[in-house]
Length: 310
Image (cartoon, rainbow, N blue to C red; front, side):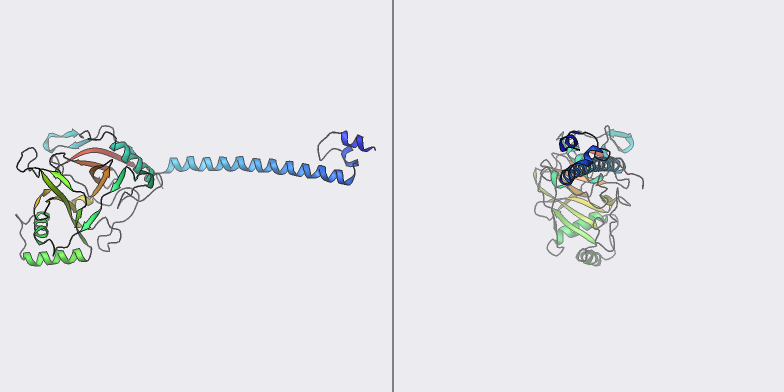
């Protein structure tokens, strides 16, 4: 059969009888082209399948991951008056800003019971407040005043005050108890009760004292890192106090005046200070210090936690 007839005959690689009459070299080139064509088609099919599988995995993980949503109309206990709506925050963007960080962490199923870290992309807007550990020997007046407030010594004094002070100082050295200052200086009036001006505006500090419950390395009061909230409310045993600039006077326990609630963590969000609290359900709250009297806190944001089933 003439070569021209073979070259012009059409058909598939497998069934073209006329093509097989071509010289060996020509048939080899044709087989190479067929092999390349099959390989490209196989790779394309594999790529499509891979993209589909990855997309399905991402979608499935999104459905299964933990999450947070903003509570649209949160209320708080208001003594014997029932419930009261949260206060509007001074910064209208703060709730959405902090929500995005919580959502990012939750959707990775990050353990949040001990601490809510700040994801790298949100660090320009949100910062953890640094703590300075305090030595009871260097601040003896403050140490005694804080212990007196924490243990209600006015109504329930210890049998041996010196022994009680020494015991607590030892527990601080062993890191079972924290005694530390938040490195964010405040300015306002240490007024109690709220709204009754008893002091001039001055510089103030937050000092924290209590069981070292949020530290997962603390052998005795170790926090269990897990998704969602802690096994109990840590803010009741890890308290904030409003303290004078010279670190000698305790003015008050830092709380919400309506229900006595407080928080255990501090955040700077868009340049403003907030107290953060997490409950045993995993719900997270932001409380804002009063602009004039920072010893009082107002609830401003609530983030409701949802946990996927195992």
